Image (cartoon, rainbow, N blue to C red; front, side, top):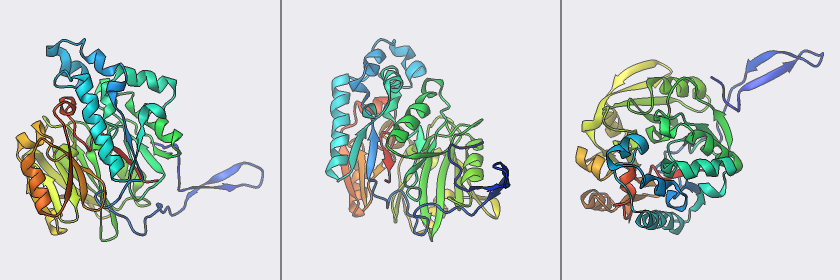
Length: 346
């Protein structure tokens, strides 16, 4: 499994213009001296996409309702104009927070634009690539389990390359989705919470560990999700140093992987030991209302749907600023604000 970039590879000339061999030098991530969690890092830009501005949503309307989920992954037909209005509200909040919103359609080549026309799931820019706060300027390509989304990583990789980011990992023989990967730094350690089961495969965790440890990663907390859910960010999202929004009922088991090996842990107990308090949500709140799926902006600010007033009120009572966007149409695609935003840290 090789990436486009191999930051640790050092070649030695043999004196005849060839290569005598390779050695592995210690690799340090940019910003690794002070790693920060996703909830702490204020992205420079977010990559977003509104499928209502392409033919993709119109194509959805041509699919019979009883075939819609199987063929498109949307759970209901959206109203294109209302969908566009709600997505525009999300982008407006991003920009009002001082973060640039980069439209995916503006940075892909012609082949990518054709892909956007055919697939409304490109709205979920979080899934097809991974960016980490302690690796500014670099990204990892995703690998999608659902066939209808198989080409998305290619499109995202093209867009991120056009924006000047360097690709460091191309997954092979596994599934790996950005919605399952949540950066969580603590005590100077670079940690990833990684969901697996429905979308990301267990082999995806092995790939992250083999390719990122130790130069860009110290620990992984693997979290198995019940089969009927999708990604980790619909189940568990730390939104500040003292709060994690979580649906415990959707967690099967979890484990800690570090230099000492792998051991079973309770992920919620682990987070509580780090000083976070659990804001518990029900399975219905997590699935129907996407209550966990908050987009973190840094500085105790999040964007959430306006669909779960109880959770928004609870977050505000903890002095977390909640920017709510309308979600009645957006949620028909089965994702939330975090799903629709890919943070860029450079």
